[in-house]
Image (cartoon, rainbow, N blue to C red; front, side):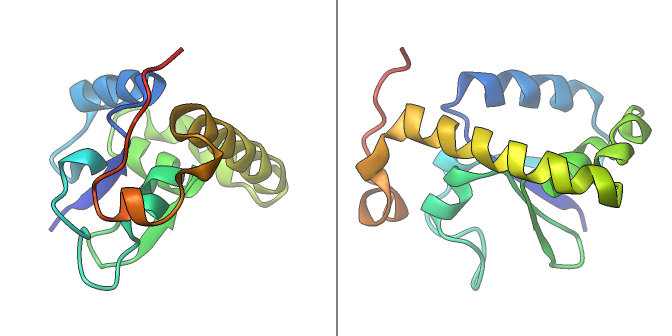
Length: 132
């Protein structure tokens, strides 16, 4: 079984990072563009809108990680994974997580607008404006 990283393929910054990760990852990590999903990734998992709001990783044992935890876990599937571990140190986690969450909220608003949440994206019928 493998870990699966769910990412927003319509986000240009996200797509660049995933392209880097694609070339460096081991076989223990699969990459999944949220926009390619026909429904929920698996029963009981986050809905489409939740997945778009922040990075998510489902571990091989079924746990869900989000945000910086998901990012660090994904990069641990590369030879550079050890470089990311310090972001999860308790003192730094208290700084990194709020910064990541603010960035993720800004990115979501920039791509999808404030009124985007809910039905449209959860059903897959969301309108995605062009990037500015």
